[in-house]
Length: 101
Image 1 (spheres, rainbow, N blue to C red):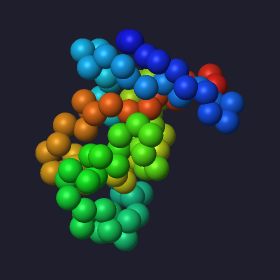
Image 2 (image 1 turned 60 degrees about the vertical axis):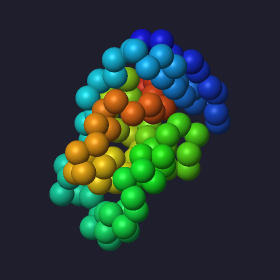
Image 3 (image 1 turned 90 degrees about the horizontal axis):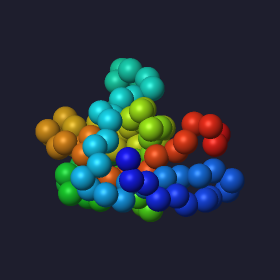
């Protein structure tokens, strides 16, 4: 996988550079039942485009995962577009190397 690194607060974040590199299927650490209903209701008011943009690297609520696709941050923001049949697995996101934690 072609990745470029960025150092922030002693943690190395990697972002996908090549759109041709396959990314693993995203998976949550916790079950969907643990999602906060109020947060989901708030996010459900946003357009699909706004939610997808909020997941982009560099955004406050960007999608952060481990290399294996485990979602570290952004699972509420992923849930709604996935329910709207957006292929969130293909979205660029930041990859945190577990050994850097």
